[in-house]
Amino acid sequence: MRTVFIFVAIFLSNSIVAQDSTIRYVFKEIGWSINLPSEFTVLDSSERSIMNNLGKKAIEDANNLTVDSPEIVTLISTRENSLNYFEATLTPFNSRKDEDYKLATQELKNITYKTMVESIPGGTIDSFSTLTKIAGLTFDRFTILFKINGKVQFKMNMLSTLYKGYDFGIGYLYSNDRTMSKIEAMLETSKFSN
Image (cartoon, rainbow, N blue to C red; front, side, top):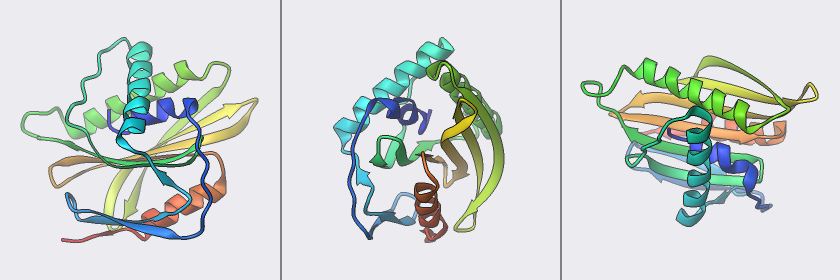
């Protein structure tokens, strides 16, 4: 379920921090580094746990299924405020024993879409998929637009790729173009070491 838990729960939390710089994070598991805008506050394990549990419950309720996600490793979970969020996760993926990666990714998109439709009554949800590159690595990008009264209120992007034996997921939710630009600049300048 990767980054989905946290996005479902994002509506229930609040935090605002304002600063002007970046903080470098290096994730040795996959040799990835990012420069996180300092306006984003890194969530601690208890905050992540609360949000993951809220998201897990919403997914289970909307899709009538039981979520088992013990192998998900959160590299980083951050937020700028209650509707601007960024997360990166790793989930071990064994192509010999797990289902086809493309099918698993499409199933996750379907579950996420249905969960969002159920979670936002009165709104309109639209979605589309594209491919995008980050530091030379191709990701499947799933975008969901949340509209109320015909106006986009916020957008969610879920990026995923199979990398070094992991389902590498990046997700971000934003309510304005300024935050989108910060997150996408961070991703564009990120690097993978070999």
